[in-house]
Image (cartoon, rainbow, N blue to C red; front, side, top):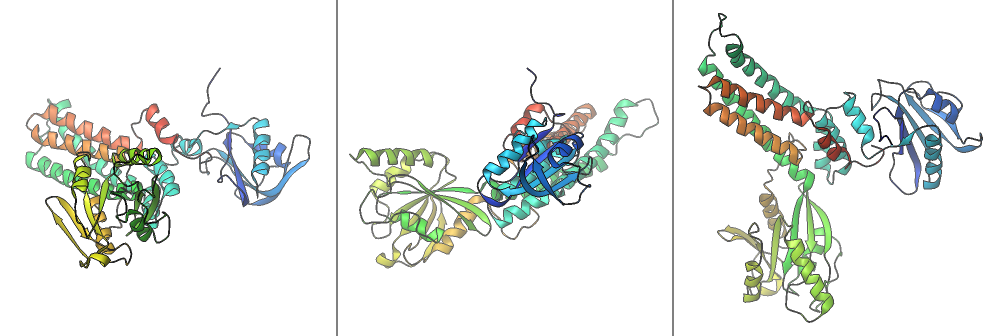
Length: 449
């Protein structure tokens, strides 16, 4: 049995599950006029919203709504696209979708509409990923950053780097391909200068991409410590609402409580965990085991201690068990009871921050420390919403250019490193891409986009 084909007509509900005032069913493929004629009793004029009745095979109305027809190639996917806007009830939308399937469409796979836009040269791969990042943006800053990628700013920078790399390759390879011609040898000083400027700009692009990556994925912060040191109170204070139950009874928190907050537009995913101690309570012990699992996945660990007692032997045992990559931020809570003043200092053993979850004192310093630990540089509006694969490719480009500089006297090796660098740049925008990579990227999209 043949699998899905890029030539099939595809259809899907394009709006989120649940009830709403309006819901959209999207259809894309070649020559949708016949499907539209059966469903709508006529083909809508191009790019004009018209009121229409969506009809079943018997001719009975399914729903009244708005139909929009975008003939190829002037559409999102580059194919004929039909958008059916009906009432946003799940049953109604399912009936419209089922009718489209009866008329020859198949159910779209996740991200298939955007995949077709890429295959039909409506978007490059970095722009297509910007679509998903815009949908998934957790903060306004992340949304603005994703929109810049979607509009092609990231691709333009990559394209400019590739263009300059090609120009350098032409100079180098001319001497290899036509040694018998009257072609001067590449001026080594000029080539070295061009290479240096390329390396500098790749480095700047990588820095901008890393900033955007922080916006995209956020910072995973785990609150850990002994029972009753104020972890849940600290979570509630940072989140601005009562998310975790707070009592004086040790072991109140049994399972992780998660909340995402914004710090200067950066998403910070905070996880409150069960207090770490020896216990005979089986349920609490399960919560403590889960705490250690969460700690293993953290970017930052806030070790919360009672400011009145300071770091105890039990706290040091917690630190000794931490993964090697984690250097804890020690948060001395309850300074409203200890009489300490709010302060933050970074030393050889990490940050030490004095706060009061009850009054909020010292919380601004804690937020600033989290941003520094994330590597965030505030005030940047020119960052890219880079994904891990983008960063890996830019790092490989930088490495290839570094090797090129070392092999410059050997023209063949110099040219090969430049070729590898160009190929890595092309993989970002999809100029060079494997089918399995495309599958991994688009399968993470929502259905209908």
